[in-house]
Length: 129
Image (cartoon, rainbow, N blue to C red; front, side):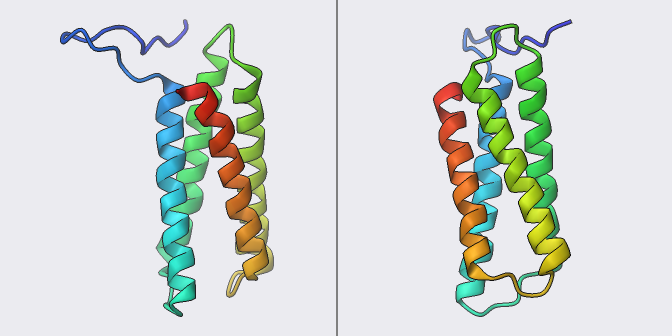
């Protein structure tokens, strides 16, 4: 049974697709990441829950994108590339910021993590909208 969220609602407007929802979730997670970068530059302490929510939110958004990709018979190749890029960002974020550098992450790694996320958003935007 395929998920179909594109049917018109009672107002005649079409609902958002799962791919669009995944894009918006990833964009919100990216905004949280930018907030953490701003806090680093201002020499503020980042609350531990913020990093955890950033990672778990990214994981949830990736799960939504996976469901969106699997629920369509004609998923564009770019959507799969976006999922792969986001998966690499998730794995890298966990490895670098939770395992190897849990206290103070090098800014080069933070910039690389953000760049991977930006690439994933670029790829997904072309599919979602």
